Image (cartoon, rainbow, N blue to C red):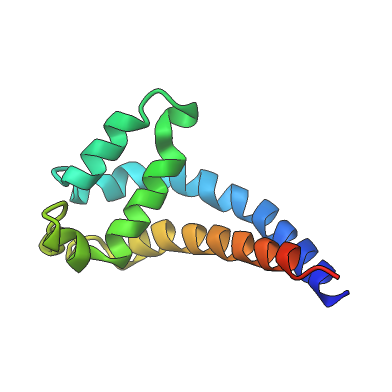
Length: 118
């Protein structure tokens, strides 16, 4: 029964994260992208998802979060420069990372509740 409540709580958390993602997509994404505008990783994401819903903005928010969370791995693959990522202000980093982590956490919670259901 506890897994049921975990699944419901995760679903509610997912629904509550949608306004956060939309705010990040339309208010903060363009500003954050200016700091890493020559990043190969980001340019490829823009090109691939340019014809999807919302002009690929949700995918670009997740791509920005990936750039912020693991810049050294991406620099090793020559996709982004760590110096560019370090120039991004802290509040913009939070706006990119927190909606992504909340969404991923809620998906993991729903998956665990589904796999371990009674």
